[in-house]
Image (cartoon, rainbow, N blue to C red; front, side, top):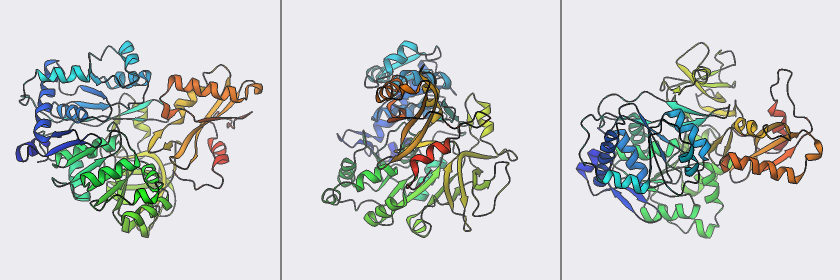
Length: 508
């Protein structure tokens, strides 16, 4: 059995959550008590099995209290990125059918959501209201406990976020969970583990890893926001044993002056895990040289349709690989679905993972499936297997931009730009950025070439910032008198993108 309740009984004063910056902590006893109160509140508000709640919060202990309250009330939990606009958050809340939202005043888009929230959203709490409301609730478990799960959103190539919906777990809330079992098997997570979470909890991997740590009795040290020196300080101070980062965090740590970076004692580290974005080969070499062969990588998606793993020792023999299948089986297929031999690149399919669906979008769900094998699914990645079964990713089918570990989908930005009255056509691409891997650039075809000016560039960026979260907005705009489109109307984006990648290593 794996559940924070078990550890609240065995070691109640053990820290479940510690905020890295302030030292504020939440014991397993307190996590259990507050989660029970949260579940009681849900039931008092007639939020029942199969319903959804939404969390729009920065990294705070309340995030995990909400998660574990929902987990025992058989609810879906939908986290929302803090940088999203109110307009973007409204879409997610409406699409997932959330009945309750907990947020706080530091979320800039909250007033807009409050003023335009969908009718399905019956309860909106700020942190003060949420804490006061659960204070009034019993501390005992609800009588109808059943496990819930997260339902995250991952943007699609059409620009609208996709709600990844999986069946709720069966059994009891304290039953073993596969994600926790994998964390224990792959990284030795247990009650002695101190796990550093440097990323926003609204991302799937930080949420899944930290809650798996709670199932296994570990202490989770949460950074409010990543800072390279603050991360090293936290590792030294809390004697962190396991952490998960994205490659841009590696880059920022490696760029610290040696006198600063090497002044921290990080010898407690046993596993440094990375995923979410490709890691440049030279960066990973530098990390292994610095920390030793404790760098481990996995590849997979929020959809949970399969994954790979690779250790540092394996990677040094297969540089650039994301590993061999550790969950499910990999198939590389051409566009018609025929399986390809080793060394030939094609669409990466997994067989044997979770049977996910994109909420309310049968077409996107169907498009993710293999044309001949319904149980095989793809995330849109292109790659190949070598003769030993190691996977190498070579491209993204949808030209998704990965900037600092954040997935950005161009179509949403293109759709907005094309609505500007002075724009005839637009392409949005990822261009090289030394710190983040890629950054967002728009290439615009103006209706009148006389408008191809720095002033119009600033106007278009401001137009994007008015409607989109900052991470999605172009950092620059170039102009093109005629974007390359095929006769069928499809934009030949590769011709646009290749201009900016000459002399650079092309990564996913």
